[in-house]
Length: 480
Image (cartoon, helix red, strand yellow):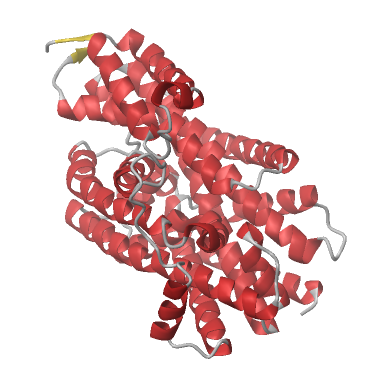
């Protein structure tokens, strides 16, 4: 199928998103933007969060890991599932009890302004890096398979896509995103299922036959039993649980949607149903990765890694599947960017600028400030995407996990210290502890071979960072 035809479908899909945004943002105000007026339906939030959690990285990178790592990524997925129970039954009750709009306001109530703003700034740093890296990955795929052919440069593509995202998020905020993420999750899962079914039929395989063939090649191997290896199953499962606790439960973007649900009971239902479906969807992505390997071997395709799925979908499958793939890819792109810009705008306005606490500001002034911050983050996103283009690093999942380990660790330590202890913190010293802990972690990781011999530090760096932050906070605290 021609690049022009694919581009027309992309524009039609975007028009659909704009229509949804126009409908959902009617009569919106600042509360609509920040918390959806606390009226989101739990089932919509649960379904939409699947797309936000998976993003373009899962869509592109996870299938590409199967050839080298088998189903090893499923170890982390099992950890995710455990982590969602902690979020549902520990963190969500706390957020609803305190009636929070920004979850970092808990740190203000528990410790003070310095810890509060430190937590918010670590979220802003982490989400900005993570979201722009995901955005870069998907824009790069669109560029390679569609836009290069019609002479549109990468930089122009990035600008157009960010303008598109701004058009449907700047007014409705969370209320709009709950609906658009639901739509986008549907198209992402449609692309996944269609590709799995088509490739199985092309190879004349049933589900059991495909699993048997993958098993005979060692591609279904899930659990790594080497204690010294960074992929050791206990490290992966425990690390996955803490990634969920940190990157979902302590993340304003993810929690902003959850606390927009009417009540705690519905929010818990949202979290648990979402987590169960997410396990199944991740398994399907791994199955797709195995099927792509079999398909590539059968057709003599030499492409590997992150390039495998888009190459097969765009060059070796029928035109209608190429269309579905591109729509699915865009559906993976937008939730990782639209929700991030909205959450970053909310956090910066509420946590850093304090516009909700400022009674001197009129509703109109608050709206102007929010729109200015929203546009500023769009510019920051654009500059970061350009930076990653120059960097041109293929190890997207590895980079994301490293970012999470260094930036979510202090958040994990702060919230754990607040929930698990009743000690009074020296609030002025909290930022120093949260900066020093990641620096120590970097020293440990870069010198791990000399310190631990053959032991490889992997996903557990997040936990180490959280523990160091917790211990540092203990040292600067006293009994309540």
